[in-house]
Image (cartoon, rainbow, N blue to C red):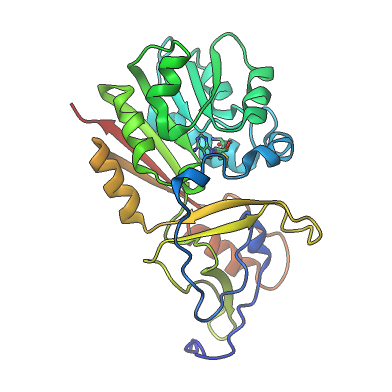
Amino acid sequence: MAKAFPARNYKPRQTPRDAEDLPPPPPPRRGDPVVPPPSSATAADSAWEAQAGWYDKHQGVKGDDFYTTLILPAVLRLLDAQAGSRVLDVCCGQGVLGRALAELAVKTVGVDASPALVTAAASRAGNLERHLVGDARDLGKVLSAAGETVPFDAAATVMALQDLDPVAPVLAGMAAALKPGARAAIVLTHPCFRILRRSSWGFDDDAGLQYRRIDGYMSPLAAPIRTHPGMPADPSRTTSWHRPISHYLNACGAAGLAVVKAEELCSHRRGTKGPRFGAEDRAAKEFPLFLALGLVRLP
Ligand SMILES: C[S@@+](CC[C@H](N)C(=O)[O-])C[C@H]1O[C@@H](n2cnc3c(N)ncnc32)[C@H](O)[C@@H]1O
């Protein structure tokens, strides 16, 4: 029979699956303080500029295996972009989505706050991709300053809404840049199962189950995240925000973006050895890493 969680002195057992959480959450702390999100004036770059070299190398041309196996296929399914159409990629980073769309003969305009990531994107871009430095919370201004016409046929923001604050102006800007009825896609770290400082893996020896422990969910939290968790001496950080799923869904609705599809993306990675191999695989199939939303711009 599974034991109830001890209320005190609980230390979650970290498992190899934690390597999939980029970065893994630190052990939960009782009374973990809720840090109010910083003002939007301080959140424009979220420290990504300093991480651009690492991130570009990590993603490479096609993206890491989570991108090639889970994230990009989901975005392409949700957008269903047709050859010759034009997509707005909000928080484009080093341009991984634009390159995937270019293979389908789809044009992309990417916007990102990090000049170094935009330079990296532009250095690999073909003639279907254009990348602009700008704040995703002010898309109208960025696009008009660059002479980009609206509306677009589709829009996406991939693994970025949890890296900025607030999200409402980003979604409003996306909606304003879309044709009525156009599709949009959002991918996030799953807001229910991967929660800053409040989620971790544990193992129930009696039940032989790997479980996900959630120590808090409803209260928003902003926190620095280590970029290289495997290198304790490296102080690099970006800021990340936890918000409950209702925050994202309501922000989409308020922007005039109707959710028409949701995909919860579970890890494709599988353990290869060890006594907990089966339990880890089950957990990988049960607890999604990413949430992908398909949206339609309301008329
Ligand atoms: C995890 S990266 C994802 C990049 C890209 N979408 C990808 O999937 O590889 C998050 C990105 O959000 C960008 N970002 C954060 N805040 C932003 C803002 N206010 N305006 C534009 N980009 C922002 C960062 O510069 C960074 O490139």
